[in-house]
Amino acid sequence: MLKPSFKVRIWELRVHERAKGTTYEVRWKVGGNPCSKTFKTKGLADNRRAELLKFIQDGTAFDEISGLPMPEARALDDVTWYTHARDYIEMKWDASPAKTRTTLADALATATPVLVAHGRRKPTPEALRLALYGWAFNVNRWDEEAPPEVVETLRWVKKHALPMSALDDAIVMRKVLAAFGKRLDGDAAAPSTVQRKRAIFHNALGFAVETRRLTANPLGTVQWTAPKVSEQVEPENVVNPRQADVLLDAVYAESARGRHLAAFFGCMYHAGMRPAEVVWLMRKDCVLPKRGWGVLKLRESRPRVGSAWTDDRKSHDKRSLKGRARKATRPVPIPPELVAMLRWHVYVHGTAPDGRLFRTARGGMVQESGYGEVWRRARVAALSAEQVESALAKRPYDLRHACVSLWLNSGVDPTEVARRAGHSVNVLLRVYAKCLPGVAEQANRKISEAMRQWRADGS
Image (cartoon, rainbow, N blue to C red):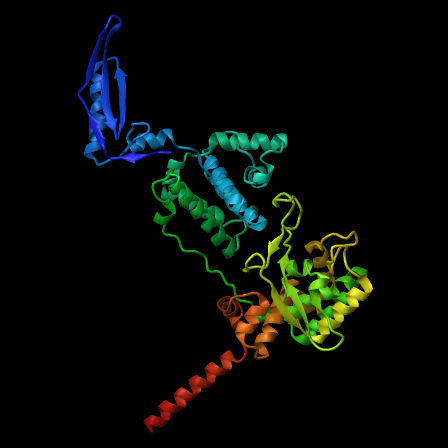
């Protein structure tokens, strides 16, 4: 760690005459730290003393620990980007959910291949991706023995990684931003992906400023326009209640697995639940009366991330509800249609030993690959060929969008819709702006009324 100081004093040369010859000592003091360097000739000593005086005249700080001018001290203390990136991911790791860990590693694994010097036998992009994302930036694997090809790839990266001082260059920064804009296959990355990676990289450089490996964040000097990101749900993705019923019927008829998952999809459509919330829905948290509306008391979620990224090395990460405090709950009223589906599900399928409503054939967590395949087949069975090729309910998550859109179009207060969906009101209105009822019609009426008023006043 460097310690800048402007309290610098330089003395005259000290001459040492000994039997082996005369030497010349340059002496100076930084803060309370006396420093010196001895030279064999007076010319070399004078040159070094003049260099130190020039740094003082230019207003350059000295490092109190090493005694060197800060530019020289930084050069000695200059770690590589690869070392810094590993320090950064280690700093972030413990406080980050498993999903966040993957996004951090993804951004660093995209930036690092750009931040290396050219050298012979550079690994392929695929080999770099495997080694960096899967091993170098996964703290859980740092104590594991990596395959020989991964070890060789990381050895090459470590040898050729640029020093942090080289990052203070707008051209280098632009190369990193360009890398964020492309996928591994060369296609353009999604705007949201580009923005997310850029934000993580900016934060990593901020950590470098904090640890005095950089004097300022070099991304701030780059004139770069972020790609536009659309968070809004498109109406063409959203099914109406009649279409939803047909799709849920198709899920039930698809197979034995479909019959087990019909209520799973029903929770997304009728309760606006996220898939990770449905995965962890417990029987004890379901109020299912014989008649009328019921209630689901949502407590936790289990997003599937992969065992390599979680603390307990299980595929699903244990998380609180999105955007909520750790023990906060979200009670969601559910209509009689979903109550009936869940009552039938419990009667026919029972629950897992831990009380989960939905499980695999072996009792494990429901996987996205499993319910995704059921959904794809149900769409083919329920929709026309043209609709199958369209964006209509393309993903199971679109059932949640359809639910929230239905609530809004039914005239439910946006505050209550946001509470049930687990959103803030601001996010709700931004994401579902195109699904708000009658907005265009209201605007048209106001414009027509204004035109009518102007014409009436002018007559």
